[in-house]
Length: 520
Image 1: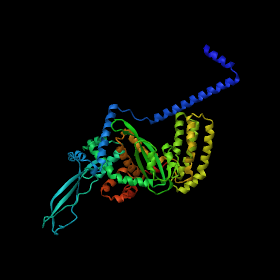
Image 2: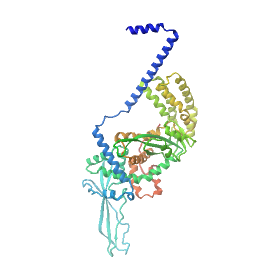
Image 3: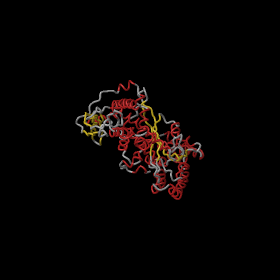
């Protein structure tokens, strides 16, 4: 107490200038401490929202990792074209095939020769015997076996034998029908069920399908679908405006048992909000890291508007003017939202309200032609944005430079030109939500997969995500779409592969996916 009293006495003896300097110094310390407290609260709030579920047991996690690693290795082998596969791998896969379960219902398809008489002499045909093969097919909630019967017809006059050709299969000599293949792919990539879990599910229905068998199917189907994915990529990159984003994907590092952080990039073509009837589509690309050279390579032939976040790897794309930057208001709004949730900031709340008025206008004009959207934005949105710009500067002057609110304002001001670009072009969106929606399926999958088993596995995932995402954008059930494609693609001319793109099959498939994909 004596020391405290002495301090008070000492303060009273200080001259005015010294006392004022001391007060200013203490005030700066308090502001710094308050800024640090605000920042810590913000981090804690973010982390709490990121937490989900319960922690897995260490041993169970290691088992899952080993299962997934094996799954990826086996899928990678099956994804290679037969001509490129070494003889040893061919011999390895000549394992004994189990008979299909007798309890499954059978559906028999009989394929009679097209000829009604002997092609050699014109004589009458009689049945000599038949070849019977079985293929396992999947229909929702049940299995069935499709039996293909091809009677052998012999001529009653001569020794000629006629028989219908064997129907093609998605995988040459494969057991799986198109519906079952589609179900396995959708379950793995859209419903986030690893193959060993699918194997357990099928076993409950009395069908013994090893994980290695399912992995073979996934690899072979991925290889079969690769020309279609390439055609999808060409369609997406032919746009004059793209949405782009990326997300981390843990990938098992070869030989270490540890994971590295790779990336999945998404590029979305979707001009429906601007009244366009050009089919929407999404293309995913995989890379081993997040270096800026990857989007540079992906977009080497693209020219137009790129709507993305503030990732530094995109910045060099805007040099030279071939690609024009359009920033994302959702990223700006999210920063203020996090601050407001963390400690109820009045300034953050006002920023949210002001930005919300810009979004109110967008909801009214969604789906209108680009020129009309531009006119309305110039008349109604530009004054709001100009006023917000002035308010940002005025508010920033009264904030500590170290506060999170100041950082959020500086983030917006540093991108102001790119944030305002949508006002002058009705085809540009107010934000990059289209790309963020496309990445949701990847974020959900990370919770179940823990990691991809290899770089090749990451590339396969990118390819299948591209097909599933594009089907959804065109309001198609992804599983029905894949089934339809897999029924045809083995016999489809590669120079007409674009006929199997989602929008070209839309008239043949039911469209029951909600059209909310265009919402902001």
